[in-house]
Length: 235
Picture (cartoon, rainbow, N blue to C red):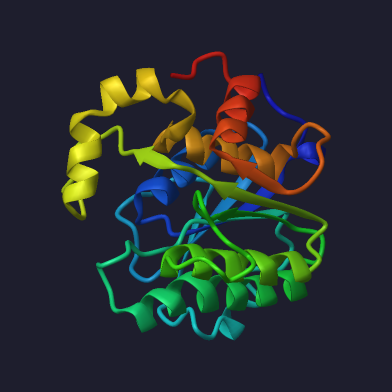
């Protein structure tokens, strides 16, 4: 069934070469409400689609050059990030804090009515008191995004993100969690989320909105409930 042009949306995906961002882009391209999907990437993706527009941008510390590409957008899904231990602490902070804040600055200036879905993480601490750098940095980014006054901001705090498709795990902890995932999911269902389900929730929030609720922060339990409300299947 076709969707009236008047209700179709233009959406931006950042981090489409990553696990969650890749699923977000694929889902957006299939989404009946999405008219066009712009992928902001460091290197061109080896895919083509009538809805897809690729913009190569290598320096996320300065997104000024993206102003034209971000103009007239209805929503954005920001999934760019790095694993703790994969980069230096300074680089982790740059990627986790500076990049989303700079992107949000240009997006809001170019499309002030756009919604923003941000991939944060469980335990993110906006107070800055956490001893874990990842938690402090994600919290710092959340705090800045809240101050940016987006008309609709969705902060997603997933716990363990199950990769779904086989991949090279970044460290031992992830290898262990993947190995025990079937049992872990049964024992602690609200501490896991499939990568594709998380991506669906982020895209759906950006293009459809969510049920009325207090606050923009979605913990793992909330994300699972959101996916279930939009889609009948959820593990």
